Amino acid sequence: MKLKKKYRSRIQIIADILSVIEDEGGKTGVTRILYGANLSYDRLMKYLSELIDGGLIRKSEENNKSVYILTKKGYEFLREFRKIKKFAEAFGIRI
Image 1 (spheres, rainbow, N blue to C red):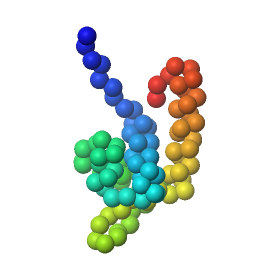
Image 2: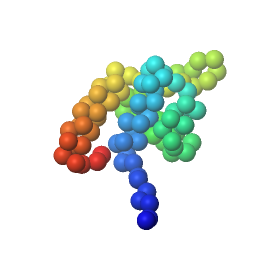
Image 3: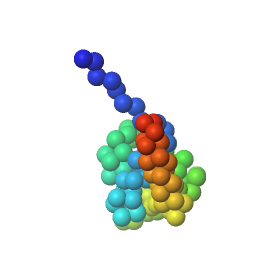
Image 4: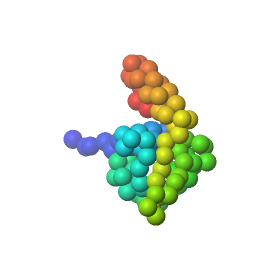
């Protein structure tokens, strides 16, 4: 039996990144996001930049380290994404 690789959609990757930050109390460093979202460093940095530009997260410095903070808009995105995902799955559609 051949195993089928499961690829995540772009929107699922974004939701995964935001979920990791949410799970860490709304803010966390890059290493935690890297492992939690299962992305390479280069890919993660591109996504983080895009999420900052979109206003879903913001970057801050704490103890000379970068931390990423979920914004109100980021929390709203996650809430709506989860509703859409649940709705789609009710019809057998994977997002």
